[in-house]
Image 1 (tube, rainbow, N blue to C red):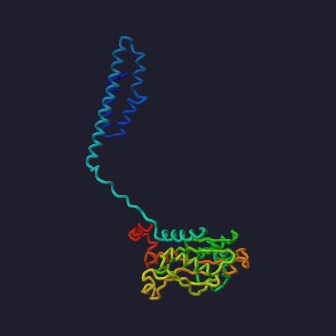
Image 2 (image 1 turned 90 degrees about the vertical axis):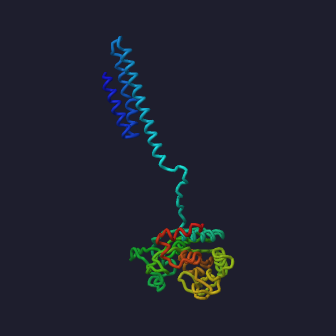
Image 3 (image 1 turned 120 degrees about the vertical axis):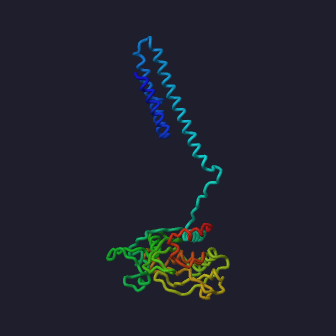
Length: 343
């Protein structure tokens, strides 16, 4: 055994550890002070040392172990002081940097509020695929092939022909799936994203969000529809909100109507936003056409129903007075952070 050589190695390695830092120091500890350190081999070799030299050699090995421990402790203390010195450069009493809290998207806030309002009067939530076949998107909703009403909605077709597939143009397709799979009474709303092949502008976008409602039961009347929508308007826009219904046309409802709500900006007095009428359009509605009920396997002689559909962006426009639809999809933090207090 060469004790002098080991002393030299210890001094060289501890010097390197002081330069290279904590990782090298840990390697030194494992090599000379760990459970399988180099000094253990010296104690094993002590058995072969002549008896008259064992005491002297044993003391030398112990001294070597003490040297390794002392060198390690000195280097560890030096590293600790160095770390403390680095920390002293910082003001540890200074408050931490404020963490920026995100916000829900305004459309999500409005969508959730719409769902909450209708859930209070028993409407469940139904969802469906955004890529739809012709039957669920058109035919079951009283849009026969080549029917002019199909031109009302510019469609993004994915596959044309016998197995025609398209991005859904409304969430009415979800209502068809609900009617096919459930027995009346049915009371559900269908929130989701829809797509139209339109030029993007402040007033239109190629995708937007809808919430459509459906109620089917015996003895359902147009008066039930009107009272349901009046309840929604007052819950969404305030107790003073009023609605008016104007005759309209939709292939899947008859009779059909457009619904206006009293202008939230001028409180119905008339302004440039509502074109001095005191009202703003918010949704379309009507009694479900018997052809739609029959197409979905529901007896139209026994059951009746009403349906309605609204654009979430339009409701958000009235609620937050944001007049450019493009802002909702640009992900501009300056715009979105304005809605932190909206929920």
